[in-house]
Image 1 (cartoon, rainbow, N blue to C red):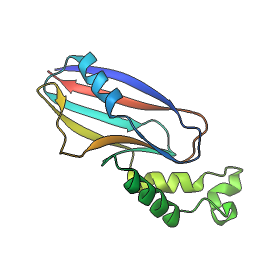
Image 2 (image 1 turned 45 degrees about the horizontal axis):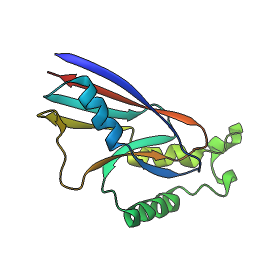
Image 3 (image 1 turned 90 degrees about the vertical axis):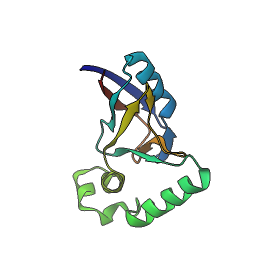
Length: 139
């Protein structure tokens, strides 16, 4: 069995955004040369997420609205974590909802997706560089 590791670096200008990173993950898979196996993609930060969903603008707006309803950023004083001097407690909670990462099967050298599935990086405390790990194992 072989393994391949690549780090994708992102810099989201706003506080919250969803970035389709499928092309970068597919490029990493091609670079790996692995034809059959598993591809792990995970955020390397505790205020962001990697998840799979449809690449549809309305859905992303709905997801942002829903997450903000579950864990609103304002007022900052509502969250005990922010008493440490941070202002990102909501980002930690949003990450809990969408999770750290995903695993996708690799079949015939391609990500084995359902029809509309794409891999997204979810940023909840942006405005600085963040990293996503791509780890591919197989033959």
